[in-house]
Image (cartoon, rainbow, N blue to C red):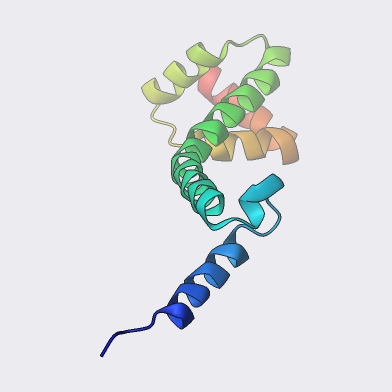
Length: 114
């Protein structure tokens, strides 16, 4: 007895179309193109989850550097001084302090640079 797979194929196609909904052109309504688009989107999603961590770190560095400029301090020297004085604040916390609590950030800068 042969196995008919129409139901299974249709279910797989429906699942695919649900994933590619909103894509442009034939990628949203053609199985072959939709599958390729979905695979490529998955690759980008995977790499960008890792890239996001790099992007945020560079954003925090830019923010800390911008907050240090009015004090006449270079970012690289500030980080080195923090390591020498054993001040354990990461870049994320420093950028949050610089943005939302400038007085606290100023106190950290004075403590590190003196």
